[in-house]
Length: 265
Ligand SMILES: C[S@@+](CC[C@H](N)C(=O)[O-])C[C@H]1O[C@@H](n2cnc3c(N)ncnc32)[C@H](O)[C@@H]1O
Image (cartoon, rainbow, N blue to C red; front, side, top):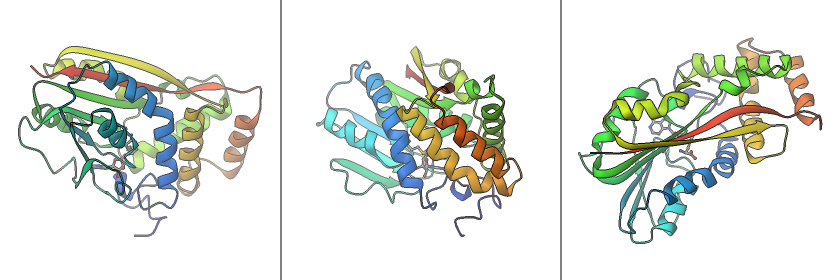
């Protein structure tokens, strides 16, 4: 498979977002810079004992797993991904090649299961969530974080709205992503019988040179060839969006980052 065969098979790993893409590591780093502080704040309020078994499912480039192993030095931190290429040289973590769709863990393996920016992209998201609950010991926590692109679809700016709609359509068609699913996370956890369910949301903006802006720009750039190939946007649209983002007078809400957590009874 070449880097431009993104539209031929649906799914994350054959899409323009996948790890075989040359810019993927840099894009994952922008994601980490934007959202690690939010994920770390969620962990800090869980009140974990130092000796916990923690799973980071679909850990990507692993900065959060690395932080977890430092923050809880007596814990065991397991980082999984379908492609573990970027999970090398991170001290203190156990790395497993693991497909969240087809592979599991024994019941009650972990005190915390964390999954970020993965389930919204997998069509099996509901069944993975149900299975992930079983991997947590009674009294342990499931922490799910994902982003909703709802704010970008509501923008009053026609250039941004067109690009946002095209991006959501591309994600749906080429991967099977649901970019509004994150908005429902707390009720998904309650539906599965979790207690002490909590959540927090954070608005990510574009055009303000924030870490979220850098992540949005890196993702849109990576998606550019696919958006053009599928006829969802023209080069003029992409140029207009780049000019808009560079306009000092422009900033707008692009996404909502949702963190939700609940305790397994
Ligand atoms: C958007 S990245 C998020 C990475 C990381 N969770 C973070 O937030 O920094 C999604 C990650 O999920 C991985 N992935 C995609 N499909 C997967 C699957 N079926 N099972 C496990 N990991 C998968 C990708 O390889 C990629 O590293």
